[in-house]
Each structure stands twice: as structure tokens, then as C-alpha cells.
Amino acid sequence: MTKTQTFGIASLGVHLPPLAMKVEELAELRGVDPNKFTRGLGCREIALCPEGFDVVDLATEAARRALSRWDGKLEDIGLLAVGTETAVDMSRPLGAFVASNLGLSGNIRSYEVKHACYGGSVALRQALEWKLSGVSKGKAALVIAADVSLYAPKDPGEPTQGAGAVAMIVDAPTICAIDADTFAYSEPQLDFWRPVGEAYPRVDGPLSLDCYMRGAEHCFRQFIGERDAKAAFAELSDICFHVPFPKMVKKALVHTATALGLSEAETATLYEQKVEPTMRLNQRVGNCYTAALWLSVAHTLAGKDEGARLATFSYGSGFGTELFGLTAGPGAKAAAWMTDVETDLKDRRLIDGAEYERLREANVPAH
Ligand code: CAA
Image (cartoon, rainbow, N blue to C red; front, side, top):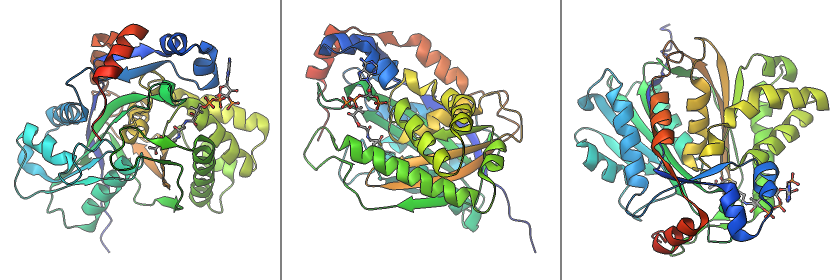
């Protein structure tokens, strides 16, 4: 019997937009106690796109950066899958806009994946399973998760807004290997949706929290199986979640760990040591939907010793969830992709409330 090959992320690229605002500025603008946004939700800054800059720019630059550090060539890409809920056209995939910018064409399967914030993870799983299936003919996949999250001005979701893109080349497991084994759970629900023709999403906040917590519990129960939950968590160096805002993740972790039999003290330690640190970059970017989990993973993998094990939990409203493990590879330690993050954070400009108001008036998203 031949040994199953292992595949994973061979190169990573990240791109964050050139503007941001502290949530305290938004609190002042909306007449809200800033502690609600910082302590109540766990947010710090929201990343924002200036006029004329959009999800295609984010996705293209993230892909360029991932490709620039990869030892393959453009002709070695056989699949391009883009997960997004910021579609710029109802028919043409976002990947076609990106491919045009990159000069990428040929014998490539290219498409867009939509399932709210889960789309990037579905694209990644499809790329991995395409590699594992043996039909890739030795080619690599380029997967991009990219979104711009904007709520209607004054919506309670406004402090959770954000934007960003993460591109991943799926091939040799240089940065991390991705487990073939995966654990999914879904239910048809109406917790967050954006009807055709509407610029902003509608959200049932309490229902989305309930769905997120239920999905997490179902996925972690499958992942742990017959093992002791504490022992299974002890094997993980970190647990990365989709991050709508940090408090939501904390609530899901507490719900799940409690349901799996951890004491209050054990749950608190698990959160402080293995979950809270994974969200520090997300706190400075906000919810970038499909990219939020992969931004957390990019940040968390940086500097890891080869062999470190991470669990990744995806959530997409509607709703779909999936949990699978990653193992840090030899390229995690040097974390070349973190220069993208450092450069973008250094170069971005913090705006004040007045500029934010002007930006929102000028920048109403396409329907
Ligand atoms: N000081 C400290 N804390 C304060 C405070 C103050 N002055 N005032 C309020 N708080 C706390 C509250 O106690 C609360 O904390 P707990 O939940 O721990 O009690 C927290 O701040 C929020 O307060 P509220 O619940 O009163 O806030 P709200 O009603 O304005 O709701 C919101 C804000 C929670 C962000 C809500 O709008 C919401 O749920 N939004 C959407 C959530 C979401 O993103 N859902 C989708 C998830 S998945 C996803 O990303 C979508 C996808 O798939 C595309």
C-alpha cells in the first residue's frame, strides 16, 4: 500500500488595507462608552478601504505576495479558488479579476466559493482534497480568502467591521501540513444574510452567537471523539477560531469547553493560553469575514517550532462550520509572510471620526 502524501500550505501572503480607525473614535462618533467596544466586544481597530480600493486589490496583492515567496512558477498553478462574500459581480468570479491582474490563465480550474465567512475554508479544503485525490497532475492550488466587512452606519455591528486578504498556495507542507481528516457541522439558519440588491448585511446577533456556539460544540465533539477532552486540548499549541469579534470567540470557547467537561478554571486557562493570543492581529484588523480565521492562523503559525499542532474552527452564517488540524512545518519558524503584516500595519494611516463619516458617504458598497 502506498503511503498517503501530505499536503499543506507552501506559501502565504497577507494584505491589509491602507486605512484604519481606533474603535474609541467610533465610540465618540456614535455617543457610546468606548469600553463597550474595547472590553465588551474585545475590539481595538477597524481596517478600512479608501475610495477606489476594493476587495480585488486586497486579493491580488495577497496573491502576489504569496507567489513571490514560492519556489514554483505561475504555470505551476492548476487551481484558483477564491472564498469571499464581497462579490463584485453576480456571475463573474472574483478570481477572474485577480487572474487578470496576475496574468494567470491556462489549464486552471478557477472559481469563487460563497458561504459567508466559511467560503475561504471551503476553498482551502477543496484545494487540499484536489491535491489528495491525485488529479492535480503535480500542480499547486492558489487559494484566496478576501473580504471587506461594512455594516450600515450606526448599526451595532459597526465596531466589528474590517477588511483583509490571505492567500495560500496549497502544495508541499512547508509552512504547515493540513490534516486530511476534518469535522463539519451545518444547519440551515437565517442568522446573517445580505439580500440581492442590498448594500449591507442583516444580522440576527443573538441567533448568530447561538449558531456559532452550537457549531463549535458539534465540531469539537467530533474532533475529540473518544479521547479525554483535556488531554486532546493539551496536544494543541493553539486553537484558532473565525473571529467576528473576540468576545464571540470567548463565549464559544467557554460554551464548548464547559460542555466537554472542563472546569471553570481549566476553561479560563485554556482561553488565556491557547485562544486569546491567536486573536491579537484580528483585534487590529476587525472582522474580515473569510480571511478572519486565516489571518489568525497566519499570526499564530509565525515562529512556531516544526511539529506544533493547531486546531482551526471555521464558521459561516447560514450556517456551516468545520474544524481541522494543522501541523507547523519547517517554514513556520522564519514566518516570511509576517513582513506583509508589519509593512501594512506600519504604512496604514489612522483616520478620525470626521474622515470616517466622509469615507462612508463616499464609499457605499456595490449591491
Ligand atoms: N463597558 C463594558 N462592557 C460593556 C459596556 C460598557 N460600557 N456596554 C456594554 N458592554 C458589553 C455588554 O455587556 C456585552 O457583553 P456580554 O455579551 O459579555 O454581556 C457587550 O458589551 C456587547 O453589548 P450588547 O450585547 O449590548 O451590544 P449590542 O446589542 O449593541 O450588539 C453586537 C453588538 C454583539 C456586535 C451585535 O451587533 C452582533 O451580534 N453583531 C453581529 C454579530 C456577528 O458578527 N454575527 C455574525 C457572526 S459570523 C460572521 O462573521 C458573519 C458571517 O459568517 C459572514
